[in-house]
Image 1 (spheres, helix red, strand yellow):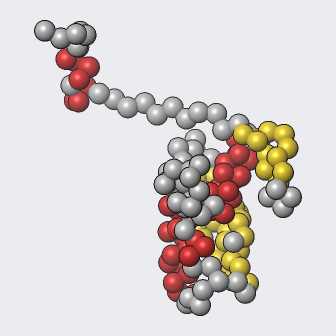
Image 2: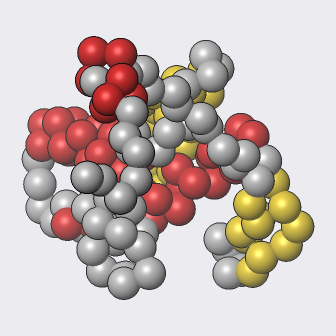
Length: 140
């Protein structure tokens, strides 16, 4: 005898369908230069801010974030690595940092410019709603 009724049809994996619901992206605006919050943003602007913040945040360093949030790009910035390694690793690291977000489908078309110990990275982001954000740029 069970304590709660069970509908076996609901447990049948063949009949199960998954519906993905993407929540609102409204968040606080961050002024990265001054380290201040001001106002709110939504939609594409919120996604762009998420991308910048996720890439700038070191993965697994801050207890407030789970292990999926952040980027490991700082491990190669400022190191004496070849351009070939940068061309291979930077896109992979950025994709890992942002593609787990349910608003982002993919990142592609990476252009990397090295300026001393810094990188300027420009790429294209395709969102799950069908929009494409071209010329997304971050400096690390």
